[in-house]
Amino acid sequence: MDKSESRYDIETSVMFQQAEHIDVGAIAAATQPWWNRTLTAVNDAVVRLGVLDGDFHWHKHDEEDEFFFVLEGQLDIELEDRTVTLHPQQGFTVPKGVMHLPHARGRVVVLMVEKASVVPTGS
Image (cartoon, rainbow, N blue to C red):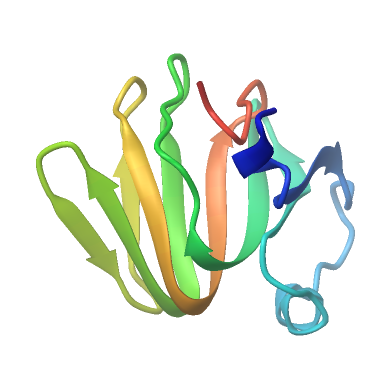
């Protein structure tokens, strides 16, 4: 992890097992930005919760697609050829191998779904 990535509070261990109740709103409300956790595993995928503010960094996932679903705020995902803007209740899948740069416009709460093998900071 380089210095620019050290400000991210990322943990990949699963917080909730199957058949456990998850209060996503309460978790997000109690969390400060640049927090990213794996809420649960679903088959070969994980559901992650991110509370973001500002820019992440350019990265890609060579082997995994990444789905973003915004719950709160505005998330712009910059791709090499365009920018996709997501508002609450909107989602977008970044295909594997595609460079992208998430920009959180103020506080953003987002769910991400991706293969369990993903390295959240990308390559």
